Image (cartoon, rainbow, N blue to C red; front, side, top):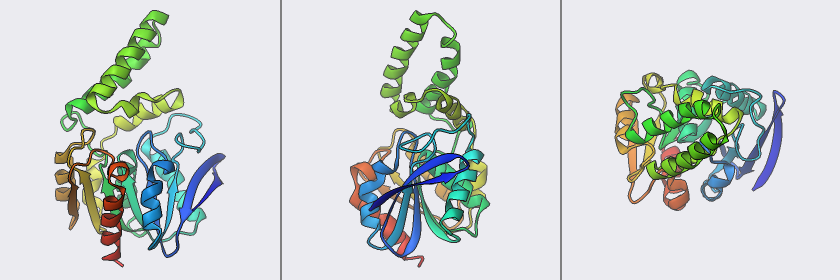
Length: 261
């Protein structure tokens, strides 16, 4: 496995590449990086050329120059695929990366050969948010208020935020600062559900049964809205089956993509 960097629009994008065969891209979740997918990437590299990148603002990649929205990420990801001459590839997206992968696939049906969505963060409308996501949203919005308060206000908010994020199971979202804090606010305010019906490529909805960040009901909602999609549930897995059950996760991904070869 090689780790390289590539320059795109004045940003340095870090990525890992391994294996030979049909190209397969992995887009990680919020707070993650290509490092968190290394075990899965090693297994998938037996059958595919696997490229796992650090999204801007994460891992060893540059931060966005200003607060980004999902379309800003999609523009960079599209240029990344063009740099590698990838005209038709398999795509895996997890959590935040799953939301990006869903929207990208809806808009680029000719580029994506088949899609796997793992714990994908898609539904952001107030009606669809679960109680954990609602708390995350409130805390993100409250941050700008407390930042204007004296030091004691900031300190109390910081302690309360860390405790509540850990309690509700979305503590990764507390690890944001500067431009990424504003980027996070932009991301959680965009519901991506309307793009699901536009996805016309083979899709596997892969979910951890004990996912507390994106509830299991979201998996069935995705499967219902994406035409001819399949669903697989990993027992005893949480929001990150690629970390807790990497072999099973990789095997399910490989099996699905190989059946579409």
